[in-house]
Length: 165
Image 1 (cartoon, rainbow, N blue to C red):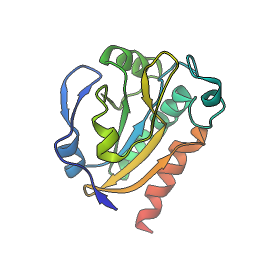
Image 2: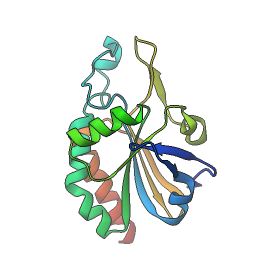
Image 3: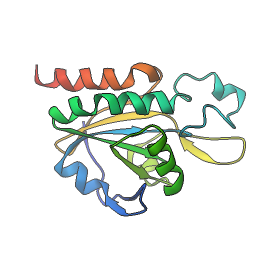
Image 4: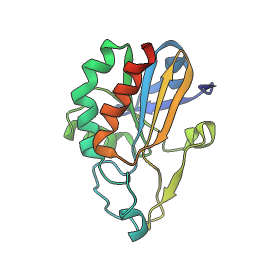
């Protein structure tokens, strides 16, 4: 386990500043790092198109939305994080009908701070690999590269449920 890094402020899908470090200090949460939101492998090189976890933002986002109330009953907030601008994030959030918060890390502040893996698309744009972090009491208690996109939300929920057993 490690402490969540300090002084990380990102923009919301509404282009408002959000103090992520402070939020993670005061709230338990799940951080869902998305690669190319809602683009289904578009502009990915062949080597990445066949990499588990690089496509599936829409079903993953919808799965988290379906389980959002269960996460909240356990005291965990959901936050989607991508490297897209606020407009693209707002569009994706609307498309999947998500009610949880989306944050923009266009400047890759979290890449070094959290040791996140990233990649470049053929068009030169950089993205994070799909990753999920669980934060409890300001500590990172789980971080994983997601390869089973369809079951990530359920697996993460089960992990949290098992914390108190």
